[in-house]
Length: 314
Image 1: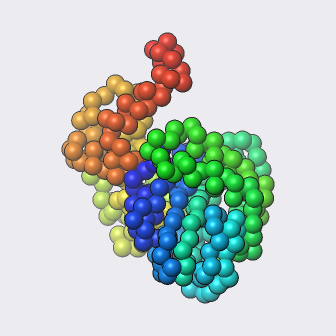
Image 2 (image 1 turned 135 degrees about the vertical axis):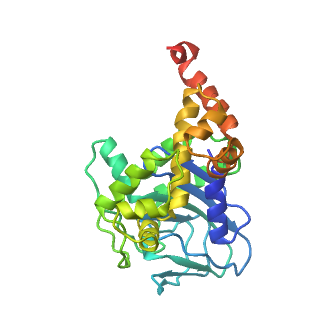
């Protein structure tokens, strides 16, 4: 399925009117994304830098890019043209900034280190320390064919079944760890995020008090930090502000309750800490790309197709 939240964020970052994006939650911890980026303007300009998080972006050129500059932590990394089928792979903590001086068509994957670790653990594979970056523009036929095969799906992203892109995400993970596993060589900034115990305490508090009006002051006191220091450290750790992270967790909880198909939308809104059903609908639709009612009907329809009514009743 497509998420309006990610479509909006990625389109804004690349200054494009639309960036069809497929989203897979197969890793459980963070989504794996695939986006279609296209521009026919000869001098598109500079894309905004992404959030500095421990995640990787893998971009495949569906056609040659004549003029492109990439900077990592403010330093020029390459200004070479990109051949058709060429890729670039780097960690988002290196603050990659791209300037396009010619038209382009790319498929952009994004996968976090946490998702890589979770999928390795689930399949009893040896954990990897990261992904090593190949030379800019190096061709990868497998990724190129995978990216090109997704193009028809981007044209009807809202109709793509989650099971389909989950399989693509799993294939992407297998290829990445078999081909690029190794220490990440991208430059990474020194940063001061939350410590392990602060992360644990923060997530415990948010999970336990999701239905209440939790404040940054209350959480920061538990972490022995000032509210300003906590907010800055939280964003450096999770890549988003505390409020946005809380809203996403509330939507995750709401999806669990919607799958049970037993509670009304107003009761789910209250249980998940939304101020009203309209507030719940607005936030849910922004993040998921569909209203709570439409999403529930879609999941119920999928369950009937996959399991059959007899198994659902059991």
